[in-house]
Length: 238
Ligand SMILES: [Zn+2]
Ligand SMILES: [Zn+2]
Image (tube, rainbow, N blue to C red; front, side, top):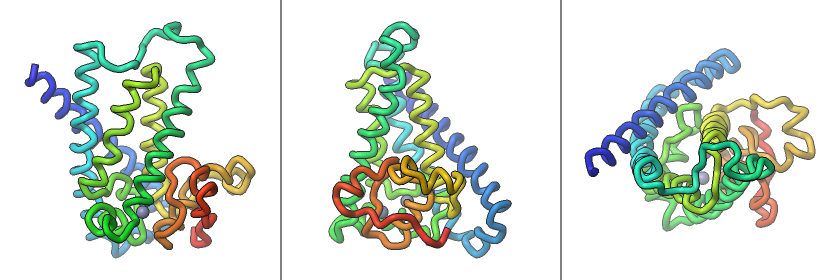
């Protein structure tokens, strides 16, 4: 049994590392086309970003691997695979709930990590990327990575979700984690500056967090930043 759990954890770590290289690599390539020279002189920083991100892959991979094993072998979790196991209207609600809850968790843990007592130990690694690049998507100190690693593996025990919708959540998480750090806005201005856009977090919003530190703490939505008065709007540099 322990062998199977270990294999699952190692496999999940490998998948997350490959996902990181594929997604960050693709958007780094796009950055070279869109903003030629953006990565010039950032070679050492990018090497550090990749190193921390690979350590994060293991920290994310272990709980995810254990839970995946438990789901397959012991019937843990509320992940379902039959399309009619839950009413159809529920299908899109689950990923929305996951994103909203993950966003709330991220906002408050992120804000806490900006307290001087925690910043240096937990969060300074992430902010050492100046400016951040697509490779910084998982560039976290292991303590910070741990706060992120537990969210989805915990939620699958409480909120039923179809496996395809879980895949969607992970895809959104990956793409937004990478693109919010790449230094340019890939979404059309019309969306970013629309009423809907004013509630969503994209690169222009998170870039401002990296510029000014004490604002724009959210992950996907600007709800908590707006409620708590920490939203300073979009970066003017990208
Ligand atoms: Zn960041
Ligand atoms: Zn921060």
